[in-house]
Length: 294
Image (cartoon, rainbow, N blue to C red; front, top):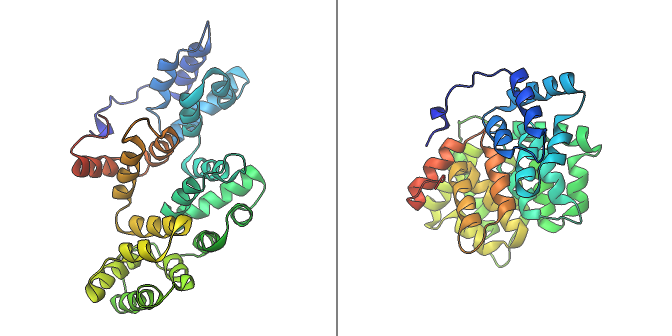
């Protein structure tokens, strides 16, 4: 199940560049060779291969891949060629473009990333697209969903594991008063707490909520909010407790029933492989009694 069983990579970036060049030659592209090389390389290696390829053949490997590959394979490989933060920036940008709008995808990526990951995404976003991430969120989202995303990308949060139990109880009480205890919902309180608290703290708030009121915070979010706003809150909450479980569920949903949601499948596998795929695979097996590979 682990990727550790792969044979060690003995080729150099230069060898890989030569092999890729050969795969492009002749009639049609040898896609198996392309996949075999690139899928077994990490971000640093891929960057070195691109550098070698340009030096040897005076052309951009990424552009060549776009011209050689088609369809879903092209989508996956081209996305894979970027480093994690650059890739996330591209996914968010495409998800926010008016003709391709996929706010669920943008919400998933933004609300599942750590503060340091978000900082890198923001830098990449501006460098690649000449616009601030916040400006695009402002332009292409609305209502409480927009307020949540803007607060989430602009608030710096603690990333350690220490929690303040007393504060967790106070926040749990504030969320109860803002939601289940009243008619209507005080969305501002949900946005403030969900965007300002660390992952560990939010998990502690969730536990305190259950202890104090007997119900789960997740259920409260589901009954008190809706649409994209609800999705954002749930993503933040579930990723604070167990990101691997969140992504295992999302992958299962993308593949169950007739047909496959390829966009989601490609996005999650390509963006999580270098982060926590072994944990996602373990969660998937535990939850669905089937390996993710199967």
